[in-house]
Length: 188
Image 1: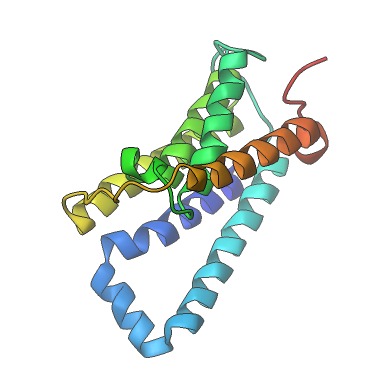
Image 2: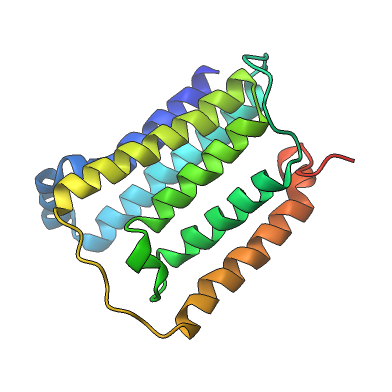
């Protein structure tokens, strides 16, 4: 379990670093250059993902609680919305007029949905840890960035792209969930 938790902590601290210490981040960019900084950031994130995957596989799950939902359509809807929000963060469109941090809100929905269907120690560590990280990230970014300046309205056709990409990826993950993660998303 310690490997999994270490990966989550490294992931969280690395992502929180620019929001918590923006001057230090800017100093590193000046010292290293933008692309080398991004490369270093990506390597640390990749390392944290490797720790998370290895830690997940290594951790022996034990039950903490009985999950309130199992294969409930509500969970699928939450995950679908999470995927759409995740892709809306990088796309022009109206979703960002209503959700300030769509990627983080998507991560929160994804985490909560998984906590509603998984009550094991490793599930709580992973999904709870990443949900807490996303909440802290939103709070820190809001503090750093100040009052929200909502984007101007955009053409509705621009909202189609994240909806389609998120929906297609959701369907693929739903279909391959068992082979990718060892647990079928829909039992049976």
